[in-house]
Amino acid sequence: MRLDDKVAFVTGAASGIGKRIAQVYAGAGAAVAVADLDPRGAEAVASALRAKGTRALAVAVDVTDEAGVDAAVARTVAELGGLDVLVSNAGIQIVAPLTEFGFADWKKLLAVHLDGAFLSARAAMRRMIASGRGGSIIFMGSVHSKEASVLKAPYVSAKHGLEGLAKVVAKEGAAHGVRANVICPGFVRTPLVDRQIPEQARALGLSEADVVAKVMLKDTVDGQFTTVDDVAQVALFFASFPSNALTGQSLVVSHGWFMQ
Ligand code: NAD
Image (spheres, rainbow, N blue to C red):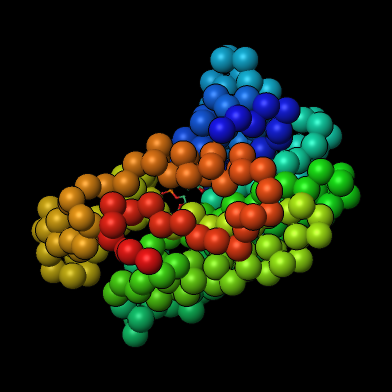
């Protein structure tokens, strides 16, 4: 699974899953735009990649900002010479019972996950069609694209929504060789999850150990967290797959928490 001569744009790549995808893509030969709201984090990831010989660019971007996303993709094309792979991965989490969920928090979460995915995919797809090279668009879903959990109304809604978006991109992109797929990870120990553990413990009246064992990993086959590398290997598979045969799909990587 190689990505030589390919250019990838990975959002939310300063941390967690996105950071590992950027590293794995670089290891597979891609040039990588490390796009994130956090400019210092993005630069740290990109400069570490450059030190290993990868053509890597740090791009400061808020994925909810239309002009900002368009500019970030344009800069990537100009500086790295094209765009072949988008990983729309930037995300946040806010947990609360639905009856207490603030409307502003609902809108903020949907904006990052759904507006961000739409804007990133639109900008990438325009370039992939214009170049005549096609490409691979990958959305970071979740087991919450398939299942619901308490306290996560907007997150579950957004992650389900990404599956619909990917199917439309797959249909509209097909004639141009643009593929779209969704990765659905189980719980991965990243800053996003580490912040959630004490919040869920408070909201559910459980110890933090019980949140991990009885909430997060309860339905896995082996009580294990999924790792950033597990997710990055699936991202590499989708990015390097050579034809439209694999499009409009979602792949769950979750230690069997959800089984198709
Ligand atoms: P993380 O907090 O480690 O990283 C998220 C990154 O997104 C951060 O670098 C952050 O700065 C960036 N970001 C946030 N808002 C942004 C914005 N508006 N514009 C640009 N960048 C922004 O989280 P993670 O766990 O690596 O999550 C990455 C993705 O994986 C998210 O979409 C998340 O929903 C999804 N996911 C995570 C898990 C998990 O258990 N960690 C499971 C399933 C899916």
